Length: 350
Image 1 (cartoon, one colour):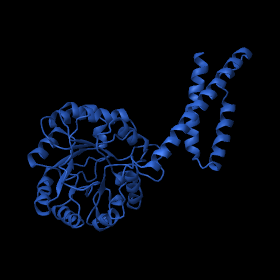
Image 2 (cartoon, one colour):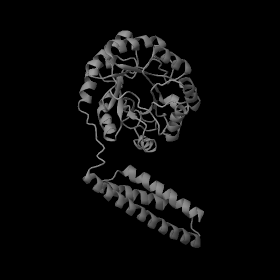
Image 3 (spheres, rainbow, N blue to C red):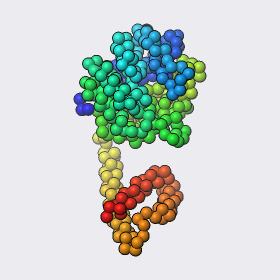
Image 4 (cartoon, rainbow, N blue to C red):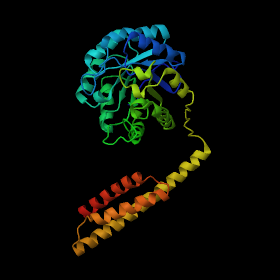
């Protein structure tokens, strides 16, 4: 994807880009009231969900195509660009007829290759900006595959939205960010605009600010944030939505990081990291050589390759020591698990 086009004209909005608005367009009055207040805060891109399939039936599932007229009124009265989510061929046809400025594809749809191909076919031949949220599962290849289907259909104004991933234990978050995955997406597709959705990651409005700052510190190109004229009364996802005034105040505190690639101090620090990485690789190679010697000894003495007691003791010792070295115990545990898996593989294959 080396020939992507800008999502919007250069003068459409300043960097970083903010796409803001309610989780759902509930009524025309609520949609317009929210948009007017967001426009007064200086925002230029308005989002609102019209089709809202829920995990279980019975909840509010959106107003559907009727809300397209409300978004058109938002555009005419405030001058904001408008965006909504699409999940089917019929949705695409409706938003194209209505002249919607941008669409996004949700996590459930992005994880379904059949649905993605249907949307790619429906969008083919239209120069419409399309953002793809990450699939609910932490599967980078599935995310890239969804983007590739759109690219193969001729779409060039593409972007990605990181909205967190479904895990068994989310901890404090509704959808834990697992930052390494979007960072790897950025490494593999450096020209692809990458936005973050802190509302869906956190699931609570008090977490939005810190997540937004983390995303911008990591070099994300913008944010997708939910805002509602009366957040506590929202018909969907009320806990994670901010008021327009709260969102405006938050944005004024955010600092956009420059890349700093040309500064001498940064270059010196990166050189130190490179040397340290070389030392780490040399140490890992030495460790694997010792592992091979242990494997040969086990074979001579008829011992099993895997001795779980020894491995458990190793993990306990290293994770206990991690705190004293300023390292997170979970990081050390995951790292040593990978090292152990490679050690076992080498012993089995010899």
